[in-house]
Image 1 (cartoon, rainbow over the protein chains, first blue to last red):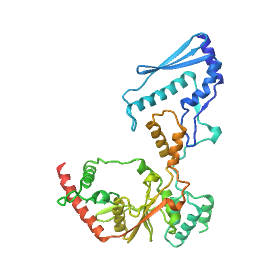
Image 2 (image 1 turned 60 degrees about the horizontal axis):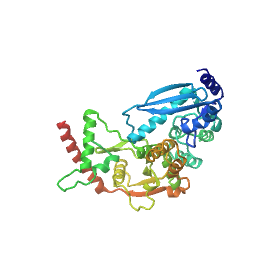
Image 3 (image 1 turned 90 degrees about the horizontal axis):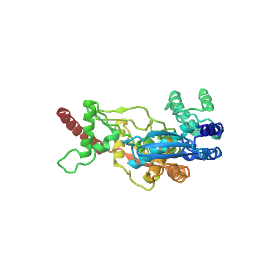
Length: 172
Length: 224
């Protein structure tokens, strides 16, 4: 196995962290095309190849060294009888296969996938906030407060105020 | 004593098939749900992408209505009202204005050209609110605001499944995102207002229907 292990170790030294394929709305995982795009040239460089055969209810991921024929294999069961809302049987199966292929391959090659913090900055999931209030509406709210139809507390509790809005509220 | 939520008045007020009946099948089904809830705490939870959008976009819709209608400052009402027959929480209830917002899921369900309220259930809902708040008129405001990102993402996935696509197809994504974005429309076109005037006859009918509902409710409570 020395050829395969050496090639795999060399591959791992070179393969970068694969950033999650973030589109405008931010997908949360590195999908197969993204993974292939990164690993295929490096696998070729190090004389490695892989197959992911579906045998019955299993996916067998096989990594091989082209010249020596050495290989390692891992198998994973495809969950059966899973029902997902809004999907027919074939869609569930397709979804499961893609999912397992992605994770089996990543695991076998030691890939690391992470958020893309370079392209769009660190994306932090924020808790739902109070709505913002634009300045025009804020002015109207101040008038309502002055007329006794609304209160400062209601305004503070109902909206996420900007610094400037908070300051002008203090002057009220 | 059984009280009916304003948002459910549409179900209660559905006309029965024959004159011999006092409650429609829809009304009876709704009361049966209330019986189960009351007696065994079996609650029918209902949520969908449509209701999710409505809830998530409520603040934005009120803000849009505020901008477009120029009604002075309006804000989300938090007070829950009830009388001896009905209960409800209108979206906006200031001294002058009573209104409820409805966020259309997509452009095709937004009543651009309608002259009358497309869904009669909302008419009864607003009559209920006027009864509760002692107002003489109310506004039903349909709003067309962008669908929240999470819901759009669900739609993107659903559209992929529909086309048997596993990996992302940018054309599908663009198609869905475009369908749920209305930034290119002027604000004025994104709000459709129906004015509803208080109708004492309708309120009297609601009251009677709630009485009928109670009779049916009590009869069911005894049988299960």
